[in-house]
Amino acid sequence: MLFKLLKFFLNVIEPETAHKFAIKFIKSPLLKSKNFENNSYENLNQRIFGLNFKNPVGLAAGFDKNAEIYNQVCKLGFAYSEIGTITPLPQEGNIKPRVFRLEEDQAIINRLGFPNNGMNIIQERIYSDPPKNICGINIGPNKDNAVLVDDYILCFDKFFDVASYITINISSPNTPNLRLQHNNKNIINLIDVIFERRAKKKSKVPILFKLSPDINDIQIKDLCKIFLEKNVDGVILANTSVQDRSFLHNKNKLEKGGLSGKPLNDLSNEIIEKFYGYLKKDIPIIGVGGISDGKTAFEKIKSGASLLQLYTSIVYEGPFVANKINKELSNLIKTNGYKNISDVVGTNCK
Image (cartoon, rainbow, N blue to C red; front, side, top):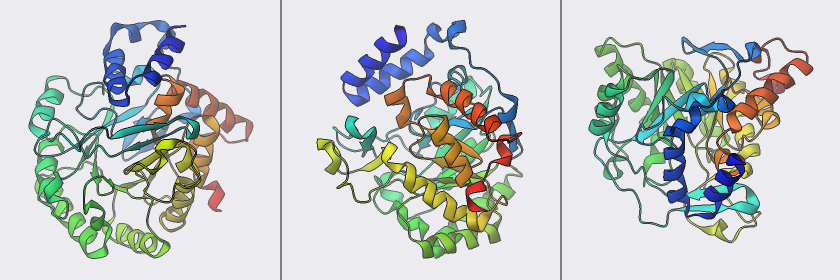
């Protein structure tokens, strides 16, 4: 009953207000109840990036923008979380309204524009309550610095010693010119600068790159070649999309911003398969986009993802969707004759 009331409430109030309420709920004592404890499934355990993941499901960047619930989300069944996107200076983001539900399509369009408290405040918050679980930190530039590397370096210096891994966000469609970082010359320079900084700090923190789904086959091939040559630790596929939405049903479908949720599932699987075709298991992939149950999670893994992240399905399936996915996914692995989730990765590509 509590779950049904919570889900109803979160779906009738304004999206950003609902998000704030969800953050407060996750921080509340209600999650201490045994009713919300997540189960452990041995066949979901993996070691990736030198880290032990008890299951593949992570909370995607964008939900915990300001590092408020990274130590609570494990109670919802998530094996890890990703804070951010964090920029050097605090910024309000784009003008409201900037988040739109597409109920009939089980989707969301957002044009948030990296609203966050800034790296100094968030660093202090994390230092005062160190992560107890695997916790990635997603970093990006302030709005006026999207084509530069300086902001990434500033944020890297703030978080390299506290993050389980760091994600370099070059793919949000809501920061003008950010996606220019996908260009060969720009991405090579960005990788070189970040890796040089990591070496200077004598750090071994894994560095991942979060990419756009709106890239063509030539770009995919070029990026994979660069990532393999540079020995990048991992990639996240993919961010929100700005591709054609004529097939959607909700009246908000033409709102400007990035589309996430169920309509991205097939696009995400397609781009993951293409990247996996080049990267194989040399560079792990975190799959994002349209995951809502065990079946969609299983297909994402078969496409080449070793780990998963979700956000939009929390809105439509409720805060306990990760527990549901893990249970269903574990059963699917067994019934399909696999011993461990790692045996499933990329099986659609063989």
